[in-house]
Length: 563
Image 1 (cartoon, rainbow, N blue to C red):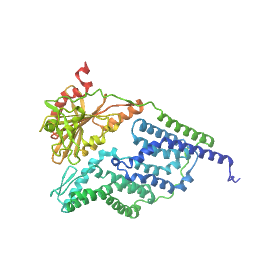
Image 2: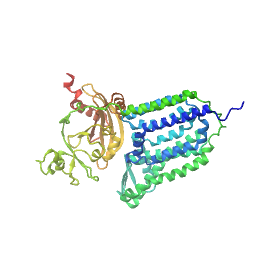
Image 3: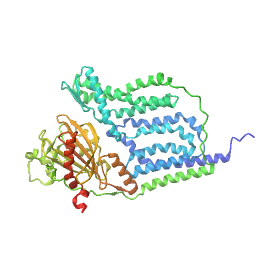
Image 4: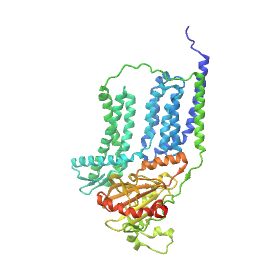
């Protein structure tokens, strides 16, 4: 007998399912509302380099609409598979919200799309939405990938130097800096110029173009993979053009005018390369297979159980959202594992305070003995002492922290600074103690360029001190115009953990925040030496100096703490 077109029972269940799916979608919207606002806000933050982020959600929506007919044809009953994916979404959101890592919440936002589709309409619907959902990952801020920027900067500066010299523009490379042999310009390939922003923007462009033009997954992946070398090459072209303009018209015009406009060079070049590749080259790779038979449906719930399942999903989502809102207030740890001041001696080197100039074209630093003669009134009280010392280079008032530190770090960040010794063999020591915000501690890859340094290399080392303590440190070799190569030793410590890895610090923080509701205080130690620590002898000298100094700055290792 021919099945009736109108089935009241099935239509009733469909209407109930749509109503509950809408309620669940509303609960998800409330749960991710804060994450969405934070993500949109990151698009306008210069540190994140996410100006392309505004285009990602509309393009992802266009991808879903492009498959609208297939999505309608694939829709089935609620399926169990979406439950496991939604549990992962809840776990990531919990770690992101309670652990203070917004990127986990943003990944959860992207995964929630296929999880909702899988749970509400089956596996086949979620599979069709996998590509648009993965494309949404391009909204993630990129500053967590700063460990990639150093190799990219060095590669870009190396190739740009060769090309500029080939165009008769005399250039020598110093780290990631391009120095004109005629003295007309000095350009540093800083993090924003490393190409990391171009890589992800052009990858997003390649992924969107591949989705709408390529007929197989292999061809789409090949076209997307082209985006990485294409972005590096277009960034090198950009650097070369800046160097040529600086040589012809001066550094001021090249940096103040052309530099800001040169970003428009990369995308036209990328489009001119991608279009012929996507239309002429990539389509010739492989064969288009015949249409695959419809995929078997996932294990699905009967209508009554499926509707109950959607109701439970909406209630669970609302419950997770409410629990995140009502969690106990986070407890902040103390920094009593550190002294209030640095020791007077580092090995046999005597210490003194350091002062910093905040003039943007100066930013010099001085030991107190060098600028003591500039003090106008030694009877000033402590609040006015900051303005009592003046820069020897430009005459501006000096400050106890550098300009980049005061601009980037939160107000409750505590500093301890000291210069040990003078001239050859001296060390400048800075201890940054985090406050309530995790933004107090930054990777050196972010801080050093702000102080005018170029990172040439970094190497992890383990120093075994005289008391048996194994001190994990990261040795950087950095350079600065007019200063040359110097040493930069970096490591981190909390009340219970000592490491040179920011990944270890972040992982420990996430677990402490999300599980125990506790924010650990961290201290980042940096020791800047007047010459690189790139020989066994220099490394041994550092180990000997730290052996007597360390128990005085990390109180759990002090002799009194062991008694």
